[in-house]
Length: 183
Image (cartoon, rainbow, N blue to C red; front, side, top):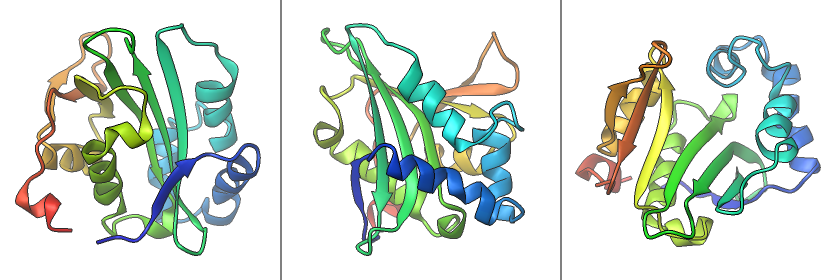
C-alpha cells in the first residue's frame, strides 16, 4: 500500500511547487507525458497556467464545485496534483469529472496513479460534496497508460464525436479488480 495523503491544494505555494516541475524535470521522460497530455503539447504555457485556467479563473455554476488537491508523502513532498469537477450536486445524479491526475515525474510508473484513483473512488465523501452517480474522464487516444489505468477500474470507453483524438471513459459504479484492491 502506498503511503500518502490527499489534501486540499494550498494556494499559491503548492501551485508554484508544481509549476517548478517543468524547470527541474522538463527534459526528462517523466515530464514528456505531462507536456503531451496535461499541457497539450504547449497549448498551455506551463502547469501554473493549467491550474489558473481550469481552477482559479473561470467561474462555475451554482450546481458545480471544483476541487484541487495535492497528494503528499509523509515528508510533505508533492507527488501529484488533482483537479476534480463535480456537477449536478443538487440532484440525485451528481457527476464527477476527473479533469486532471498529474503525477510528479519522479513518482510515475510506480503505482501512485492507481493508488490515488483507488482512494478517491473508494472514499468519495472525503473529497467531494456528494457521492457521484457517474464518474468520467477524457483520455487522449495516444495516452495508453491512462487507458490501462481506467480499464483496471472498469471504466467503459467510447469515441467522442466532437473530437476524434479523445475517448470518454466512464463508470456508473467503479468496481475494483483483485489486482487493484491488493495494492
